[in-house]
Amino acid sequence: MITTLTSSREELEARLVKRANADPAFRQRLLDDPKAAIADVLGVSLPPGMTITVLEEAPGHHYLILPPAPLDLDALPLDDLELALVGGGRTMRPHAIKCGVSNTRASASNARSSQRSSC
Image 1 (cartoon, rainbow, N blue to C red):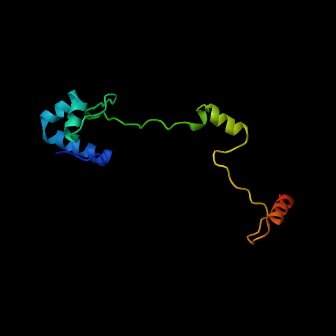
Image 2 (cartoon, helix red, strand yellow):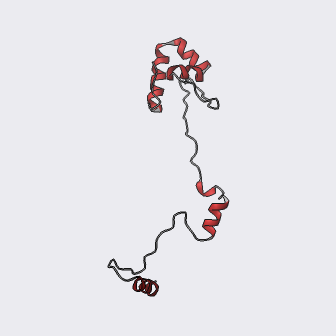
């Protein structure tokens, strides 16, 4: 059975466990060559750099799978552009500054003078 890539990880894991419990040969293949066994279930080739490890729990021995640690974005170095923007007090998206400008239509000279005087 070919699955879509939109299946969640939990759904895929449940299918693999169900099949492994029903088919001892698949269970052994999953332990011996998990990448090939899972690729067959998915009906697609998995990326060459991907590593999959299957562990079989034993009574009294359990595994806790931790996801990758979250990135500490504050610890990442800034590139030259980011450093220049931060160092210069600028942001990536310039914001228009409206200082006391009314929504009425005023002449260009009145608008300029009111902007200067209220900022």
